[in-house]
Length: 105
Image 1 (cartoon, one colour):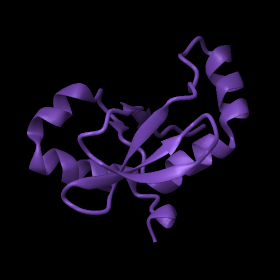
Image 2: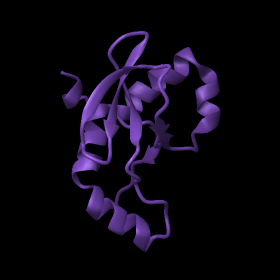
Image 3: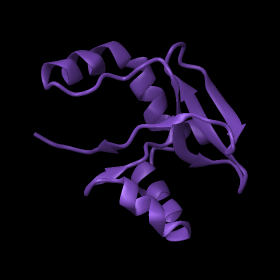
Image 4: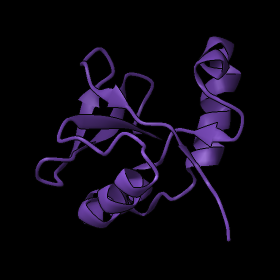
């Protein structure tokens, strides 16, 4: 099930292998989150935004964001940050992409 996909890094590596120009849009260590990861981000949006504000970074908005979870060659999943809904849409639709980077303490 797509909602349980938490391998954004692996998904991004597969996307870059098919379209190497995508790598130019990502900083070192960044990847496109999977549907499961974006769903968690939407669930904890307020806490994440507090942390992002604390470090002076751009908060998560309310727009929809593409995930790296594909359902077919033409479709991928996205999450609407205004209400947490997940949708499977044709890739020609316009949504934002929010790259993330894993970190540890």
